[in-house]
Length: 166
Image (tube, rainbow, N blue to C red; front, top):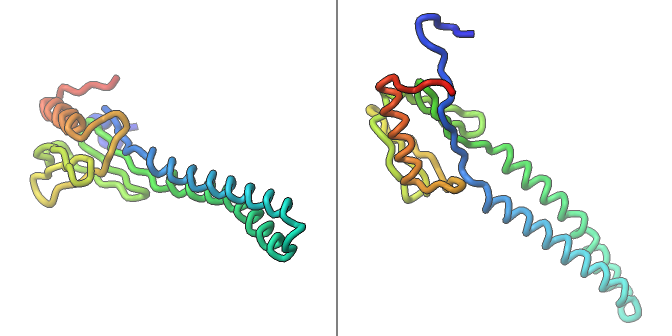
């Protein structure tokens, strides 16, 4: 339902999400390393009971703790990645940058353009007034220059009222 009958309801044109691939790989590698090292330590401690029983007991406890910590590290790490949601939404009325619970809206008329921001691997949205809005990257299968071109293209179409809902 449109709250403002004089204006059309904004619609989503495109959206982009920064890649979480590196963070996910890091968490999975850490968790799998903990489980593997813990399992090896546990199995070796069970075979080495003939030598030093107290050392074998300590190794068994440490190995068991590592095996239990691996899935816990994976679960908590992946939950943290999923909670820190960030995406760029191109709507018919402007750009919305969502970072966690914070949303920043910039109308197309308040945006002078977009350009690649090499220092963050993302895009800088140049506002007509105020500092640029930095969108961190990298993006899956999309380099910053291509994203900046897409943003500028959608901006031009929006300012000429050429955008239509799909």
